[in-house]
Image (cartoon, rainbow, N blue to C red; front, top):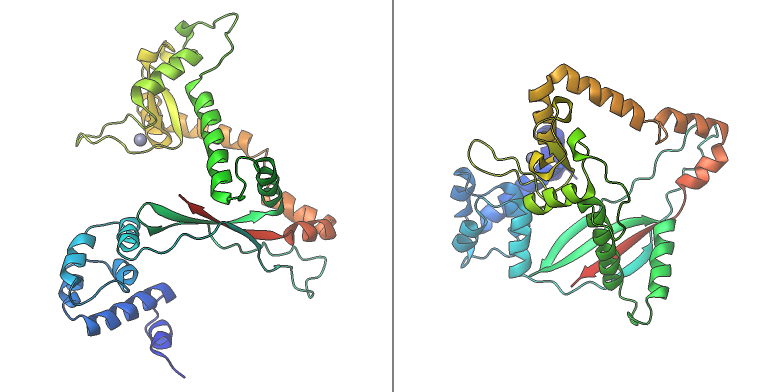
Length: 317
Ligand SMILES: [Zn+2]
């Protein structure tokens, strides 16, 4: 049978995702013709329509199109979750089917890496999320061990409670490292004069700027980045800038790179990045090393590749 989907992908050359979105939109327009204008005017995207397809009715179509207009995919997902809340999922660890290399794989061929379903964080109702990830055996064992160790505080063995506590501890530890909070006192303080950033200065700068890039664009908007944050010397260390908090600012990696480029020039910054990359690629095993190991120790690598994977679902309260 030659389906409409086949026609779109084979004859029209659309990607499977695009074909799916267009067909879903076409079906919706047949049911709710008013949507055609909203699509044509760019008021609503096809990907938003696909998400909304089960909650749209004749009586709410105008209201929903207005609410979803200009929203990101994630915001539309939340809108749907509010309108059609799903019940909580139960935290679970279940074994995924084995993805062993097929028996025809000879020892001279490196096994193909396992395809793992992507991690997900999905809104299922107002302020409720389903978290889904694939774990290797090590993480599975750690989760089970934590569950056993927490059994008194968490008698039902709820995974969400375990993950929440684990993440709390991680955030506490990482913020301590980032902000330089410590219970120990240093015996000798290195001088901030030579640009050295003390823990106290680091903490002061992060407390002042917050855990967000402090770059403000020409339009007056502050960069929203909250990850890969770095401390930048306003007057560079090489030009005699001190490591005091007044001379420090929190920048994301991109803006820190920009600032360095303005001061030292692109060539210098690129050379520094190359040196850094050379240094940092030494640690993880390169693809070539992995291939070579696969050729020399096929059985060992095969065992690793077929190590069991687990799907972990967590209901977040
Ligand atoms: Zn930034």
